Structures are given as structure tokens and as C-alpha cells.
Length: 245
Image 1 (tube, one colour):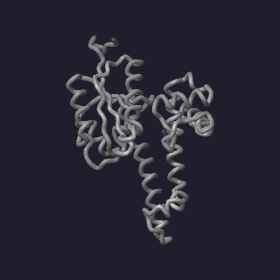
Image 2: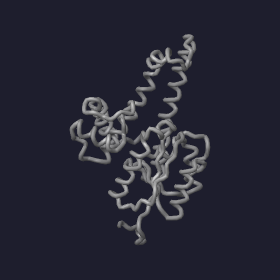
Image 3: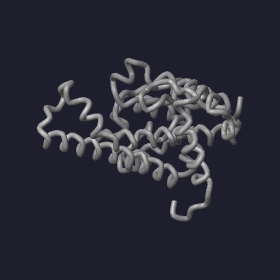
Image 4: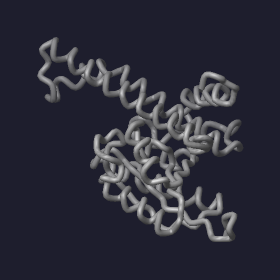
């Protein structure tokens, strides 16, 4: 068992989150995140003392500790003098102000599986800010798409409007697609052996980690080719020095 500097075992509490009840009921994300945390803990010498699960938005207007399971994760971490491990920092929050308040108040160590996200407080704040920006772009795109359909006289919510609504939301889907590219990039960061691996191998590892496609489907070697190519480009940009980052 790996120990900390004082010779004590390194304990950790896992925290996983999905945004909607439907995702939770269908198992889209929670168990996959939990399995990824277990694997990460084993590989990095943590003793995982439980995993807490929430189903709520990361941009919630409430304080982070108003989420019942996250509040319990914080309590567990304090009792055990442990860290909280998450797959990505936006699982904790997509709201920079709420996250800042939480850090000042609780002083809990959070460990993200994404390299560099939790290296220091500044890195954590940048990661949360990126998550908030993506969330805001998706929300803005949704509002614009609905407003456009309303102006055209479409009765929103009826099945007959769905094909037109889908066409109007291409920008939203494009944003989601880019998020998937970043998910793949982060997998390549965590596992350098995959950087030059075949599309089939990367697809298999993504599926095993619970990172599904934008349509919540399993990846195949054909469906992943474009995103994998873009992810490798993002990886090169990510690793280049950038004073403005």
C-alpha cells in the first residue's frame, strides 16, 4: 500500500456525477466513471474507501455541498484525511464562482484523472472555467435553436418538429462532438501507449472506460476515426508551450 509523507496509507473517496435522471437510470456514465476511478486508484496507490454518486447539473445554482452525495464525499474525505478523486474536474462543478467558494471553505484535496487539471489551485480554476464556457455555449445554442423554430411557427415539443429541430441544432451537436474529441485526447494523455494505437484499440479502451460517443453509443473503429484524428491534433497543441494558456 502506498503511504503519504508521514507514513500513513493514502486514502481516497471517489465521486461520480451525471447530469440527468435518464442517464442514471440507463447506466450511461455512473458505473463507467466508478470503474475508471477504481482503476486509477489501483494504478496510483490510493486505497479507495467508497464512491459517492450524484445526478444533477454541474452548473447548479446551489452550493456544491447542497448536493447530498457530494456533501457526504466531502465529509468522508475529512474524516479519513483523504482526497476526492474524479474522472474530470467538471464532475465537481462547471461554475467557477461556486467552485472558488468551495475551495476557500472546505480546503479538500481533489484529484482529477486528467493530467494537469488539479496540479494546483490555478489549474483547477482554469479547468472549471473551461467546463463553464462549454456549458454556456451549449445553452446559448439551445436557446437560439428554439427561438428560431418558434419564429418559424413550429409547435415546439411535438414529434413533427423534431427533424427540423435537429437540423437547427447542428452547432450544439458540433460542440458535443468537440467535447468527445477532448475526452479522447485526455485518454491519450493518460495512456501514452494509445497515442499510436489503431482506431479499433482506442475504441475498445474508450468503451471499457465508459466514454461513449456523442449519441451514447459504443465506439467502433469506423465511428471513431475522425474524432481520433482530431484528438491527436489536439494532443499536439495541448503539449506545445503556450504562455497565454
